[in-house]
Image 1 (cartoon, rainbow, N blue to C red):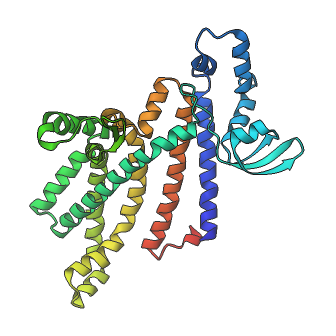
Image 2: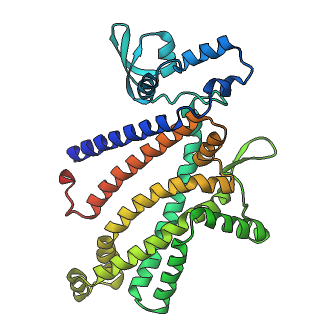
Image 3: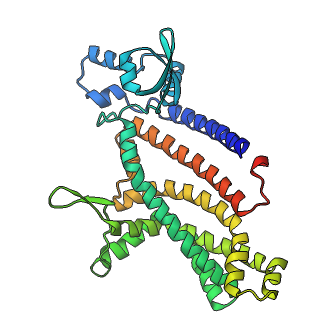
Length: 352
């Protein structure tokens, strides 16, 4: 187990380094940070001072090293009270004029609001996670249930109807489904459904207080979940049909076990391994798909904040959001591998 986690953390670290490198060179030079923060009429002396403060007066390769040093949890910084306040060290080991420090990744500050990027993203991230997890739970429950029904009645009208519907679901991009759902259920049928075609998880009431609106979660979650539902239906049906034909299932039935026990405890558990693998990929896809869905439904999560930042050329927020998402993907993959080993004892984590 320890060697497995160590390998996965090493691979994850390499992935994050690659993402950080691509992000830095991709967004470098898109807009002048000084003009974005100070306006177009700033005097030359102020411009030069800010460029020096942000490290923009250095060669590109030095800016890259400084960026990696800022976002790394283990870094080397010049020993000063200003740096201690800026980076909020958890631990510092003196190295002469430098310090080896343990800290939270420093994603710098927004060009527009001057707020710490970490604060902006951590404020928006829970809303996107709630949306993504809700969509995934919805897709998992509906997809596995329909897949079992289709497998237990192969080539029946139920099976054919479910398969045709799932094919239609796969062919629809999430943003298209979101537009249709918002138009039909949030606008045309609003008087009957009570659902809004736009709105966030929290909204201000007449007294200026934030109020939780769970109903604003329904349409975005459904829009994100339609394609995963279709995939899970087909995958569950295929693996269940294969598992139901295995000898151990026939043996369980021959022993007189109730059909419900045979289906759930024997067939379904063994059929879930490829479904779990697919779920991990779809959870990552759902989190990225949420970027477009949040814009359609005006749902102010991580995607809404990121796209707004890109429109405003607020690069620290856009870059920080991509790194946030990459960290989530790495964590999801590690958890998926652990779940896969738990579901199938034949898989040895130590050899993975």
